[in-house]
Length: 155
Image 1 (tube, one colour):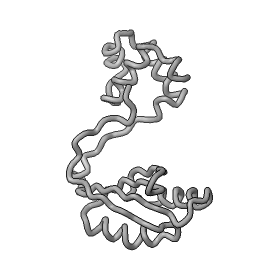
Image 2 (cartoon, helix red, strand yellow; image 1 turned 45 degrees about the vertical axis):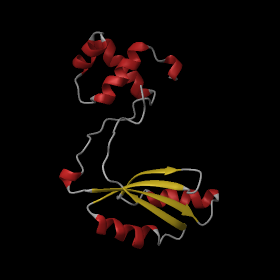
Image 3 (cartoon, one colour; image 1 turned 120 degrees about the vertical axis):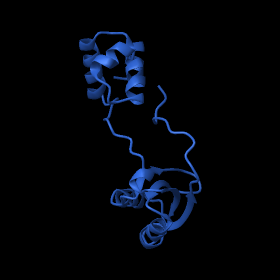
Image 4 (cartoon, one colour; image 1 turned 90 degrees about the horizontal axis):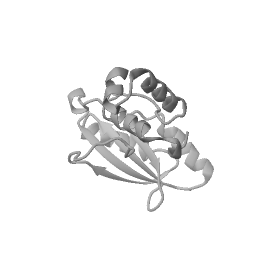
């Protein structure tokens, strides 16, 4: 299913689920203006097509003791395909790294990290990240506060 295959109801379903993925199918159907059985069929079709990848709980990090969010711009020593893939695989092993993006420009990767505090983050940067054999440079940015948080895709 390509974007061109989505009709107005599909788009309404995606908007509503992105706002609240826990609502019942009956509530979703009411919000988008169709009955429950076709709504469920549409949701399943969107899931099967990979447009809906999953459902997640959005956790309040500070209430769980994770008070620091930082970004790391990482430059590798070499940008060969093998080195890029090796570093990307290594990132998967680091729980503190919550998102990782391969980017172009001054850096090769942009990492969003979440840590309990500054000391834990600093230890990760010094002992793990900069110690990795592929890493040449690391620039960090500590966040002050989040001012906007939406789903990744505008629907």
